[in-house]
Image 1 (cartoon, one colour):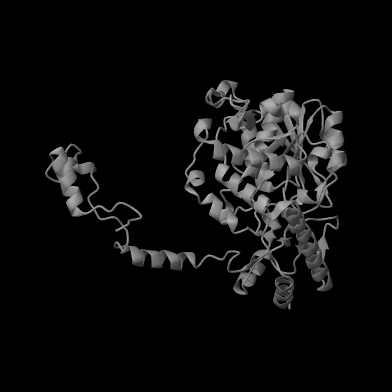
Image 2 (cartoon, rainbow, N blue to C red; image 1 turned 90 degrees about the vertical axis):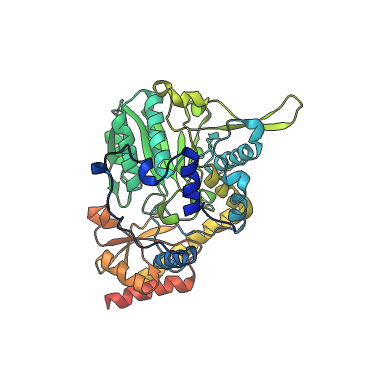
Amino acid sequence: MKHRYLPMTESDKKQMLDAIGVGSIDELFSDIPEKVRFDRQYDLKPALSETDLLKELSALAGQNADSNSHASFLGAGVYDHYKPVIVDHVISRSEFYTAYTPYQPEFSQGELQAIFEFQSMICELTGMDIANSSMYDGGTSLAEAGMLAAGHTRRKKLLISEAVHPEYRDVVKTYALGQSIDVEEIPLKDGQTDYDALRSMIDGDTAGVMVQYPNFFGQIENIQEAADIAHENKSLFIVSSNPLALAVLTPPGKLGADITVGDAQPFGIPEAFGGPHCGYFAVTKKLMRKVPGRLVGETNDEEGRRGYVLTLQAREQHIRRDKATSNICSNQALNALAASVAMSALGKQGVREMALQNISKTQYAIRAFKEAGYEVVFGGPSFNEFVVKCNEPVADLNRRLLDAGIIGGYHLGLTYPELEGHMLIAVTEQRTKEEIDALVQEMEAIHA
C-alpha cells in the first residue's frame, strides 16, 4: 500500500523501543521531571481515516472564494490571468520541482538553461541589458533596487512615488531602515506621480527615484520625464513594472530606466492567495556586477559544447554579509520556470494579444460604468485597472457582490484615506463581456 506519509503503528513503536533497549515511552522520557511533563490530552479532534480527513479538508477548501468559482475583479498586484495547461505539466517534472539550487553546473544544466531563458525573456520585455535569475516577489525586487541605488551612488535618500504599490513601499521602507536610508514619498496629482513635486524634492543626497509603470491605479505614467529629472541629479531611475503591460508599452529600458523590477505573476503563476510569486530584476550593463541574487551565463565547455553556469557572483559573496551587495542568495526558480513556459507557449504575438485584450476589456468596463452613471476617476490612459467612485461603502459592496458570485475590486480607502469610497477594479483577458456587464448591473442593483 502506498502512503502519503509514514504511519506509526504500535508495532513500529515497540520495534524502535526494543532497538534502543527501552521498555516504554514513559521510560524513554524518565529523565524529564514529571512536574514539567505535559500531563493532559491535546485539544484536538479525534483522528480520522485518510478518506474522511480528505473529505473534511476538501469541504473546508470549498468555502474559499477564488477565481475558479467566482468572476474576479480583484487585482492590486495579483491577477487572474490565462495560464496555458502546459505550465503545470512542465513544472511538475521532478527534475525541476525538486531542484534547490544549481551550484554544480555539471548536474544542473536543465535548471540553469531554464533560468537563462527566463533572464533572456525578461531582458526582451524590459529593454534592459541583463536580468538576474529571479527574486522572491515584486516588493523585494523593488527594495533591492533601492539598496543597489544607495550603494552605487553612496547616497542615503530614496524618493518613491505614492502611486507605487503600498505594500511595495512598505517593503522598501523596511529594507531602508536597516541601512539608515531615508525614504520620502512623492505625492500624487490626478492619480499619477507629481513631477513638479519630484523636482522640488530631489537633491544631491538622492540615490534613486522609484515609480511604477503602469502605476498602482492602472495609470500609464510619463516615465521619460521622471528619468530625465533623476539623471539631471545623477540619481538612478528605478521602474517597477507589470511585465505583461510591457508587451504593448515602450519598455522602461528605452525610456531611461537604470533598473527595472516587477513581479512575473501574470505569466503562468497562480494567484495562490498572495504567493509565492516571482520577482524579476533587470539592469543596465554598468550595474551588472551589483545585481542581487544570481545570474546564469551561457558559455562553451572544453569540447565546444554549449553550457550554462552561475556567473559574476560567488555563493560566498552572500555568506560574507559585510562584503555582499545583497544577502539574498536564493531565487524563485520554479516560478521563474512557470513564467518562462507560459511566455514560450504564448509566443510574442500571444503575449501581445493577451496584453491588448487587457486594454480593450478594461476600456469596455470603463465605458459600462460611465454609462451606468458611475464616476471613473483619473482619466489618463490605463492598463488592466481603473478607479471607480462607489455609492456604497466598499466593504459592504464587496460582501454583497460575493453573494452574487463576484469578487469585487480593491478597497482603496485601506491604504489611501483620501480615496475612501473608491474601488480599484481589475479587468484581465479572463473576464468576459457578460461578467463585466454582471458586475455593473449588480452594483447598480445594490445602489438602487
